[in-house]
Image 1 (cartoon, rainbow, N blue to C red):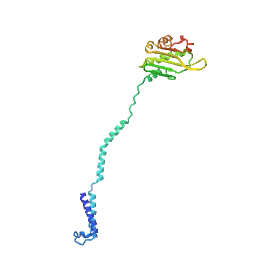
Image 2 (tube, helix red, strand yellow):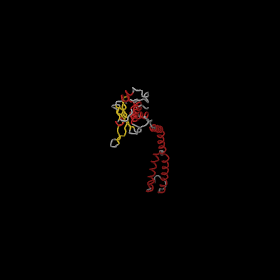
Image 3 (cartoon, helix red, strand yellow):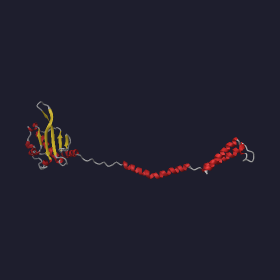
Image 4 (cartoon, rainbow, N blue to C red):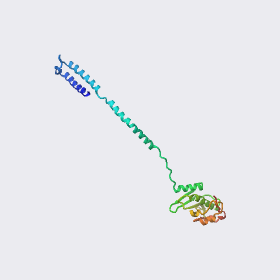
Length: 244
């Protein structure tokens, strides 16, 4: 219907224009005389009526568009919710997995449990030989004998923990100290070095030897047994008992 009224609207509009230009064209449709006023009135009313009818019968595009727009929104709501849920799941921080301890972590832990401090100590591990070397920087000692007793204590205390670690077959302990030469110059040198393999270390009940003289055991069982000459001169081997 909308197309019909549109067509009539165009027809009456053309007739209105022709009636204004040459009203005589329509004298056959009018019984009485025809003039511009009469044709304008008739065709003008017809144009207005057709215009109104076109407006009434034309499809409601806005309502249709709204319906179309609302339908996708309703169907996409579940999808939006699902996407949000996926986003929330993705944003949840994954539980941090603890990093596995490497050999150095385990050796430092052994030092913490045995010597109770890391101050002045350094650790070097050689994978090929399975040797863990614990070195200590220079510090003040009461006398030469206390230096060696400190090395005994460090080797046994650290060894009890370090030999529990897979991959440690030998423990080497190095204590450094400052020595003054004949010219009065002070130099840092190795004071004591003791090293022992696991199989030899485990032959002893070290806790049973606590506060006993272990000079002979250390001398016979250590692969490396070095004491600086300046320390040996004043060393009292009778007092080299094990402190644990």
